[in-house]
Structure formats: C-alpha cells, structure tokens
Length: 439
Ligand code: FCB
Image 1 (cartoon, rainbow, N blue to C red):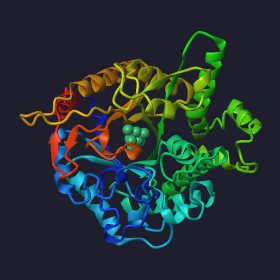
Image 2: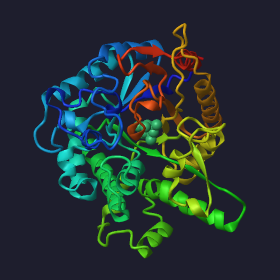
Image 3: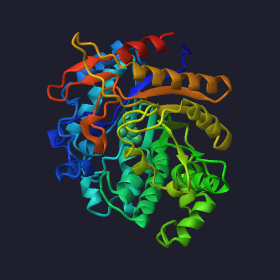
Image 4: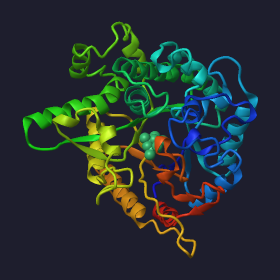
C-alpha cells in the first residue's frame, strides 16, 4: 500500500448520528421533512452514532482505515444557521475529531451533507442568495475551530442532488418542485462553496479544501444521433453544470441556452463576478461514483426517478436499481483528469446496497458487495496506473444507515446495524476490505 493513499469509509450526520434535538441541536430540513411524514422513517435515532461514538471509533480501528469521512450537522454547532454557536455541538465534534486523531485516523469532514438549518429554509433556503453567505460564515467558523486538527475539508456533498432531488423532483428535503428554484439552489450552493473556500483559507491557511461532486456517466442508448444528443444533454444537466464552473469554465453554454429558452432560469440569478467566486481554486476533487446510465431521448433529465423505479432489481443492478458498471468508473476518472485536471482526485463515495443480514451463525455473507467493491477498486488502480492522480478511496458506507427517502431498507454498510437495538455486526465485506487495503 502506498503510504500517501487514503483508504477510508464515509458517513453523513443525518444518516447516522440520531440525537436529532439533543444538547441544543437545532432543527434541519431533514428533521422537518421526516417529521412531516414525507418519508417512512426518520433520522431521530438513526445508528445512534452520537451516543455510540467510542464503539464506532474502535470499529474504525478494527477496520484498519487511515481516514474517515463524516459530516458536521450545521444545526448542531449553529442551531439557527447564523448567529449563536452551540458549545455542546462543538464538544461532540471535538470528541469525534480528537478520538480519530488519537487512533491515527485522519478526520475528513464535509461541511454540508444536505441538512440545512430549518431557520434558513424559512428565509428561502438555497433559493436565496443569503444562504451562500450563511454557509461561508459557518465554514469559516469550522475552519478556525479545527485548525491544526483537520487538514482536508469538503465544502458541499453532491450539490446536484440537493438542487434537483430537493427542489425539482421534491422527493428529498426540502421537498420543492420547480425548475427555477432548482437552478437557483444549484447556483447558490456553488456560490456558497466558492465563498467558503476563500474564507476558510483566511481562517486556516493550511486547510486543503475540496468539494464532493457526484456523477453519472451518460452512455447513449444506441448509435443514433438523437440518443447521442440526449446523452450530451443529460451529461450537461447532471455533470457539466457542476464540474465546469467549479473548474473555471463557467456554466456550459449549451445548457445555459437550453434553460434560458425554456424559461427555467430566473432572470438576474447569476450576478457579475459570481463565476469567478465559484471558481476559487480547490486543492482536491471529491468524486462520488455509483453507476452509469443508458440515455435515450425519453430520459434526458429524469434519471433519478427512472433509477428508483427499477424494482425489483434485475441482474447486474444493486438493490437501489443502479447498474453495476465499474468500467464507466474508470472512464469517468480519466475524463476528469483530461477535461478538468484537478491536482488530486479522492473517491469520496463508492458502494452498493444489498440487504444481506446475519445468517444463523451470526455471519453476514455479503459476497455481492465484495465483488462490487473489488471491481471498482481494480478500475481505480488501473486509472492510477495510467497517471490519473487518485489519492484516496472511501467506501459508502461504514454503517448501514438511513438511506434518505428509502429509509432503513437500503443497506450500504460494511457493518450491519440492527436498527431496533443499534447492535453492530461487521460483515464479510468488512474483513475483506481490511485485507484488501493492507496489501
Ligand atoms: C449519495 C449520498 C449518500 C448516500 C449514497 C448512497 O448520493 O451522498 O449520502 O445516500 O448516495
């Protein structure tokens, strides 16, 4: 194993912490969304990671990882999103960060994994420009508080999902559905990212800052020109709309024209100077990769709904209905290097959902997860061998957790969790991952 390479696992606050209103934590949009009954489960208890911190830290040691990606719940540290700090919230993340460092594991926090303070949502949420500034202020406070203990940061997780599943499809919090709202939410998140990068550097010049972008490799469903154009459009909607501005190329012109001609963008949304702010140089790119899609004219934009409806899963798909396609993983990694050229790429999420639970002897035989991860790590190694600067890989996820609107029914963990009791059982994939990363 290369000493520099990070092997880790990832989680996010709402999906694992529970303790949704403990010790002064404020309400987030996911708390509100779940309590309103928009999804069948809630994250009120989740994996109860908040109360089982020491046990979970010890499990990370057993797993043998050298890095752990988690997210900070904005409402735990600044309950209303702006204004007063909540010292008890800082205490929890101090214990997490210090507990990791004491065990020789690098903490890699994400500042925003979709749990916007409800107080900010009440003032317009990501559709409002003010939220970009609130985010930058929060980011600066975190960089300053953790300076000297945290080096690598991620600003946003998957702004596409927040913008489009949260504000167009409406199946994720805050459950809105309009094109102009979704495009406003995407722009203000990117602006918040750019402003956060600047302010974090001011607070801690040693910080190494990235963003976690998700992707879907868009493969035309046939050789026809129509499907090729649909795949190009889908790629613009799903990938280029985020990668291009972050890497200083501005918004893709074909998409800007399409959105403008369809009346989907609010006039005046993009101010002079915004694109320069969004392109604030980053130190590394986080890539979340799960699957690819075959795109035809009928599915230019509605991939998410389409993917979720693929039930029951067909062979070659995971239980999320997502196609298993490690080859496209390699293709996308090479493409990032060629097209956007980040100094470093870290795979900040990769993984699969399978429901395998304990057999009678207590063992969880999740061979399909092992096969998925093994094939994807092989694809990554081959891209590295070709010179793509990949410097880390994080499995999604450490623990089975709340899979957003899919609830507890979708299990991505290397550790099985009994959601009634909180009991943890490392799966076969846990043992396998430990040995694969110690090679
Ligand atoms: C990603 C999310 C993560 C998890 C996985 C399965 O889109 O970032 O929280 O839900 O998908």
